[in-house]
Image (cartoon, rainbow, N blue to C red; front, side, top):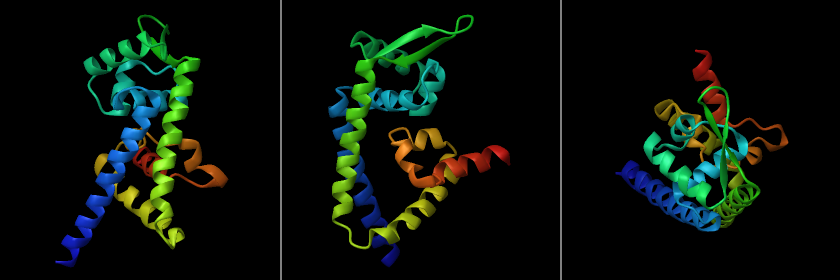
Length: 172
């Protein structure tokens, strides 16, 4: 019975934070949730093709193409020819600003939630362990971290637990 209560507490907290975080990020970026995720991913990985971008944000390629059409019409991304028929997607200055606003809004929601927790230092290793376990099932660090501030995760020479799990998966 205790495990059910613990699972319920975790589920309610995660669902609430996810709803608040994604809503704030999308509103700040002025884009859909998938569009916001695309903007954030493209800040770290400029020039991705539509198929790879779709995989990294967890949508199908046709939906990604429509989303990119909308972002391009709003001046947030630009498609550029690569080699052959390949096309890469890059952020415009406005797209980079939208991604930065989304990350700031996400950070504010999460910081506000953490402010309610005493003993936060004990939470970090537990979350790292949880993320490694989740990665074992999802097996896609890119998908798990599609709205992450990647630079913040590895600041002060820290190692991202999801990135480490992904590297271990790829070398095994």
